[in-house]
Amino acid sequence: MSAHDNKDRKDIILESAKKDIDDYIDCVDKEALYKNYKLVLEATLLHKMKANDLDELGGLRLVNIPYPKEISLKDLRGILNDDSILEHIVFTIDVEQTIVSLRNHLNLTDIGIEPILKKILLRTNGVKETLKIEKGEKDN
Image (cartoon, rainbow, N blue to C red; front, side, top):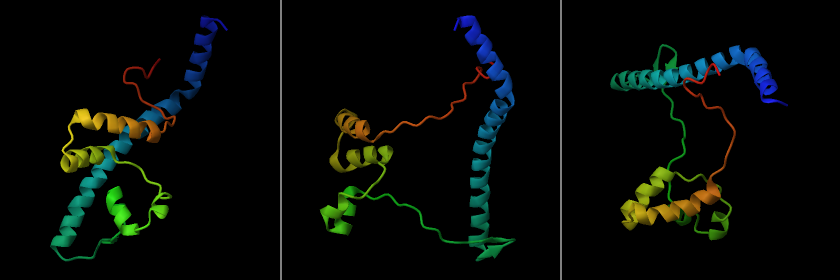
């Protein structure tokens, strides 16, 4: 296939996908905006409800929901008291918190932390396909 044929094919595909591309970019922009707006509204409403001792307001109810807390491997080992179970626990590493912990608890500097993270990330980083919006490239 020649470069000209390839460009023609790409132009045809772009023409048929133009609305989907525009809608996708619009959704991504709106998603970030609405997510931030939701967080602001939630914080405002929580504050108002707590300040006035209200469990319910206008169809909204205060509820406690569980969420995953950060825990070190050392703490998890102490909870389980059985390394054979620990070997089968699956978890995701919080890189930022790991860096903070290595600095605070082992007094490591970036020079000491870097090779540790490199070893960890070589084994734990996965790759998945997704779309990245390239500003200014929308019409190409």
